[in-house]
Length: 327
Image (cartoon, rainbow, N blue to C red; front, side, top):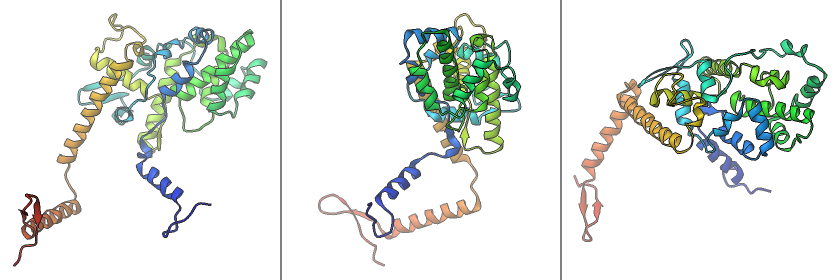
């Protein structure tokens, strides 16, 4: 039994309170985690990675395998104009389109659109696809991760099961992350016609979901930023430092093949420092309210009085000593 102190709270409760105080604002909670995806992908066998390439999702092997500083990502989300679909920054405006999302991740930006509602594709499922729906419906991301790692791929049916599990996993963990711990209806349309993943418009699927989630963040004050906001940083870095020409032969798609490792770390560090400096300048130039002005003036007056009443002088050892001035 945990021992309570005089104030009535246990040590465990105190520790939880400290962690809660250090936790950043929930409004800045980002769901897109490339590191989680890489940890699972790197453990796959060569045969499974070949199936991922066959699905048209092989470019995601270039995602960074380190923690991404959220400060830059959250500033890009806050700078996103949902009416013009542009990121407005001090160095220019950057238009976000489905085609650019496709170039960033090597995704197909043409083909059949994903169904937005589950009832739109339920009637199109065959018996095998209905069984797959029953297998993954109501399951958590952890279940899907284990399926991706442990699923055998000896028969064609097992290969299709792996493809479905991987498609759900990459959506839930990176491309279409949500706040729920379970697979959402938005992730299920890929179950239908899994052998034709390259014929589906993945870029539009990812971009439209991201726009709607950013709109929720701005308009409804959502606590978490859902969607693949990582793609905003790839497009921003590519167009700021490599130019805005879409089909530049010097920087071919997928763009994440270039923006990895130390290059991304250096640019994120530079952007982080720029954001900090801008915020400091804004804080200095921001007009204060009447209460803030009075509070600052009172503090200044108290400091002046304290300096007048407590002059500093040195003692025999050469150290500064404070004594109240005799009146």
